[in-house]
Image (cartoon, rainbow, N blue to C red; front, side, top):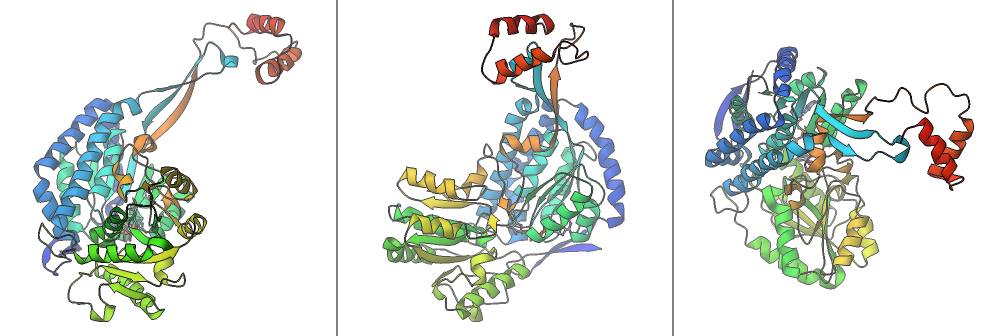
Length: 505
Ligand code: NAD
């Protein structure tokens, strides 16, 4: 069986790639587990030297990589360079910087009743990790979790999306920079993903749709396999009357239309305070009119990546128009050129909650705008979704921005910014509600790929401990101990003398 790669922009055949037979899933794990022993035996610094080499090769090949990504996804080459190549290089560099301290034993406090002892957290790799990645950022969203998992001493089985096999093939080529079977890149669709999930990975990192996330979680739950699920979103941008209007309008256009809206953190709904509604609408329309769609390096927006996604967006726009939405920018679906996958950015007003675009992830270049009166109303509207990935708020009143951010039930927020919180690798990243489980990036990132062992250590010089047998004669001391350590002090001096004689301080 082969995976065929077609350029989404014009349907040109890019190549075909051998699928990994589903029957090989068992052998892939055997190889992975065997390689893991020697990979984990290396020091963190030794493992990072491979990641550094990987980063240098990636930067040396940046143009070739951007070309492959742009051809496979339909995104512009400039976008491929900034959000995919730059994002991956930054993810690697962050891991290289932070892994040594994050992987060292972490000292924690030891309370007085454990006086003389020490406590720390020891971290080690989980083992063989399965990483399943999507097609919208097929390079960055694979490299980033792979870097964290490998730095922690795991071996990785990476299954990239079958919709962008040429990027999968590129990742497979790059995997040869690591010792054999440390990073195995397999090629296939949902059947292969399912077979790999069934083979008892020690951890699963999944990025993709809610429906696939659920299937993976159900399977993982049966064997208590820990997971991180990075799923879909329905992010809202909220613009208050005191916002920098031009900045907010430009941000809305970039946030909604970047990568043709195929971004999990895409701005999928814009709420604008009534007093500036008309001027904001006129500003976003002007900004949208300036956008250039195409394939050259100066183009702002490329095409959709898959026919499936193109049809989904088309249905949502038609459904909204059927229910009375007003088309402010773009074309009605009847006028779309179905011979390719370019969608001219669409701005809609007169939005109703019954429209699919209000509740279902769009993942396309569509900006629905709705007015609100009060902060209370805006918070309720923004939280009115089963998703909880990200969002943004625009206002010149920073205390309002912080208050509003505090009310958002989302895993990520941007203040007077849009989308980019995910690009600061010092911030943990992940969604709440139906947008996912767990976090990567930040301190949590590398550590999520570790088993944590909590250690309490004694020097071992004393023959016994106060709490050990025998109990006889200690009851009153324990009463005193509870009072003195956790309640009101009583007979402190005599308590501390008996405590010290029994439990050398
Ligand atoms: P998808 O769920 O269709 O596929 C994702 C991956 O899962 C692919 O590699 C696919 O082959 C694999 N897969 C499918 N069925 C499987 C199964 N039963 N078992 C194991 N693997 C299986 O998602 P997609 O269409 O590729 O990606 C788009 C979705 O991803 C959107 O909803 C988007 O919001 C979400 N996404 C989320 C984030 C995030 O960080 N939260 C980032 C990017 C994309």
